Image (cartoon, rainbow, N blue to C red):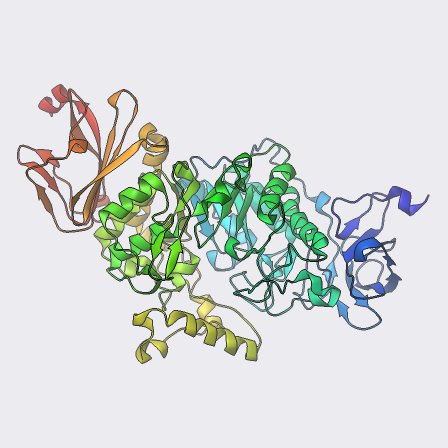
Length: 633
């Protein structure tokens, strides 16, 4: 029977096994005039098969002898041999051959999984290579039950597209479709997702659609039109989403988004540095990616999160209102204010933050702090109005991969502030109505640093280290000769090894772990804190470092959250109406960061005959009880 008549493809590019045997190959490569598939190892090897040139610069054709496990490369014009740009697996990294993968052999057990809504999520950012000592999908999978039990609901996995070297963050990926071999095989990733779904955990993947890594990227050999000369990229040439011959490039990235959702059952994507995704097309590629993800989920609910440094809220506005239709934005403002409040440092990109109570009240109510005001650090206006956006659309955090690494030593925040301030800030993060995000190990005060690490060849490694040093000079405290001489070397394997988590610290730091578990339980089980209702929280400044938030529930079932980053406060008089309990009730402590279980010293009643006494470096949540009940207590 004619092979062409039996052709069945899921995607427009890549190597795909055919129902009647063999593999069909298709690749966009307008630069060469001739292309061959070299079967180098495995079933059908050795063999060479010429592909047929098609319209619009594609090459395609069947290779009957190629099967699952066949290793192959493309030979261009009888010259160089290169891996498939849409390779599903690179067992030996980006300089080795590609491998034919059969995604249908994996037996999923998540048929009843309906996906995830944004509302109610607690995100956990993780780097597979350092999350466990082994640094594999299989090892990470063993820890999923503990994360679910702690109260995590959504895993955000840092990029896993294939990259060169023995270790890296993943943002210099070059194999867009190939889960990096360092963490295991593609089916190991699938097992990880399948187990997460069994435990009720969603999984989204951090993807980099703004640039390719500087080493191991062979796309220029296939076509220079993958890249754009119209724009200036921060990390190399930007992707060509709107120039001549951009159609196949757009198709490549849309296919990639669909692939992760379809073949790995992922629940969405986190889009890295969307401000560096340049596109003047009538339909911006980010909007198109969002539509593609929704369609590929085939009815499952999905979440699309964007990192966007200039804070363009258009990304999460509905498409019918002129937006791009994504779900959430990282809120760097919250992190920056939090770090200033906890450490007292407002240098470099912290310059425009004071860490004062009004900043936190404004962020709880309105999301971003900067929505179009002038921003001294950048000497221009920053942000676009986010007024009216639901609170869950802002992802808040006090630690993430970038921010921990940017303090020079890669130190976790507990080494930069006092225990009381950190407990109070953690309470604000986890009880406020935004979507909170923790970084791996944060829940048990991991002492492991998280430094920048990248295993590149010697000359590139030197340039990367110099670039990293230059970036950190913006911090006055890191620009000193003493500090410059102590910056970690990204290419040193020990830098990477020191960043691995030690799960025995869950027990050693039990007080911190209990703090997070209890707060997440309160957020989940208390109907008022769980509501995330727009406009349901107001706040007031009580002192220079003390704020209150009032969460309005139904039938006067309100909550107070008092957060004091300063010294003990005796509020007498207390002329603030948000402090008044609902009629016929009195406030009672519901939760306190000063609970001795968390390392605190206990919490006397805050509202008493002596008026309000609010402990320093603490957060206390209160709920109303009947005044009659109070009189009996």
